[in-house]
Structure formats: C-alpha cells, structure tokens
Length: 83
Image (cartoon, rainbow, N blue to C red; front, top):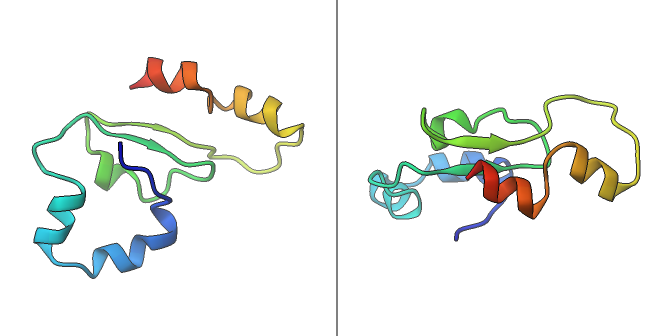
C-alpha cells in the first residue's frame, strides 16, 4: 500500500515525467482510494472514475479528534468497506 499526502506534493508530482508518474500510480491499477483528512480537491484525476475517496469537504467541525474521525469515516472499518 502506498500512502502519502498528495495535496502537499501535488505541484511537485505534476512536474515529473510520465514514466515516473506511471511508476507511482500505474495505469493498469483501477482500484484506487484517496484518504485525505482535508478537502477532496484534486483527487478525482488520480483516483479516476472507479476510485473512491474519504475526505472532509466542509469547514468548522468541532469535536474530539476520535469523534471527528468516526463521523467522517476515517476508521479502519469504513476504509475497508469503501475499498
């Protein structure tokens, strides 16, 4: 499993060669899941039409961290179910 915060390196990744990008995100792999404890902006291009995402597309949620992670689906159970 490859895990990284894509938004933080978005610009840098786009500057890479097509060969490099295909090595990181092989074109033959269609089952893709983006998990970002932030907005989903930018992910559609990389997870494609068959991909899924677990993100937070709103602002202002306030609660203990564990409660927020459960509320927004950042749990092992939800990740497995989604993928």
